[in-house]
Every structure is written in C-alpha cells, then in structure tokens.
Image 1 (cartoon, helix red, strand yellow):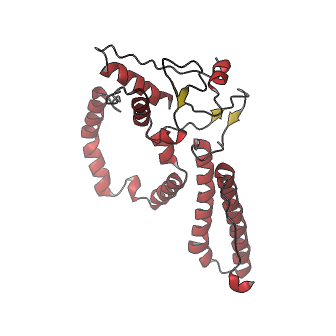
Image 2: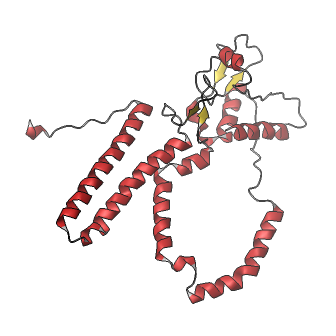
Length: 254
C-alpha cells in the first residue's frame, strides 16, 4: 500500500511539474512517531488521511479515506484526493514490469532454447507429460483460488502487521471485514485444501479398498477432520465480520 501511495505522489509531481499546484504527500511510521498517530486519532492501520491548509485540529478537521476504497490502490487514492481537494492528480505512471533489457534477454533465451524445447516436446520427455505434475498443479490452483492469493497480489497485502501497541508482536489475523492479511488467507486456503483432498481421497481412492473396517475408519477420520476445518473457517468468518451461521431443524421435525 505504501508503494501505491508513493505512485500517487510521484505521478502528481510528474503531471504538475510546471505548475504552481501544491499538494504534499507524507507517510508516518508508527514506531518512529506514535504521538502523531494519537493526534490523528488513528485506531487501525493502514490509514490515509487528508489534511487541509486551514485545518486546526488534525483529528476533527481532516478527512479519512475509507478502508473499503483501498481495493483499487493508487487509482482510488487519486480519486480520494481529487474529490476532496478539487485538484487533478492525473494519470498514474506505473513503472513497467520488465525493462527493455530484461525483455531482450528473455526473447534471446527463448529463441536459443526453442529447438531443444521442441525436441523434448516431440519426444514426450517434458514435465508436462507427467501426470503427477498435472495433479500437483490442480491442487496448487485449487489452493490459489480458495486462499485469496489473487486478492493479496492485486492489493499487495502484507503477510502480517506489526501491533501498534506492542512493536514486538505480529498480527496475522486482522479483525474487520475491510481487510484480509496474506497469512489468514493462506490459513483458510490450507483448511479448504485439506477438505478438498479428503473428498478426493474418499471418492477416488477409498472406493478401491476392500476392507470394510478400514473404509469405515477412513470415512470417520475424513468426516471429523473436514468438520474441524469447516468449523475453523466459520469461526474466523464470525470473528472478522460478526456474522454468524446458525443451523435450523426442518419445521416438520418440531
């Protein structure tokens, strides 16, 4: 998020290089200036606030950016600035993912290695011909989709935060629906993956076991572990959002 904030600042400077428009961007580190956080009345991080030129009270006369607007990162910050100051930030200048030199090296390597790659493909000796690779890839994609990894990449979410009350303590689970840390996403993804693998084991492997007692033991184990995993996910969702999931008996059973 700090990098996106820096992008907004650098883009504003670039777009207004020859004008007299003044807008100051600054970031404050909690470890270095805890008193400043108290002046602004900051209760949670990350926190973005706009202070006008006539503001006398940093807490009451400054405007806070809603954490729910962090989803579009630099673009949403620019819109926040434009809506509050009536200034135009302009286009966001993002650096290219790869430089021209890196692109040239990649193209050269592909051209050099293409004959060897083609030979391996026609001979059927590549990793793509190994069923285990496809199985591992399927599990990875499943974990990637249920863990919120794409959310973490797009929003560049940190794996954890430092507790502002105790700098020696790390926060892996953030309470609140407006933000999800990378660690908690991976934790939920791990639980979902356990349930998915157990379901695949029961439906594709356990059916070939001839011992009925072994089947029952494996089924009970799979059900218990799956119930535990789902319970943890529901508990985390309730802790973060306050929403609870309740079971109800059918009305005909009453």
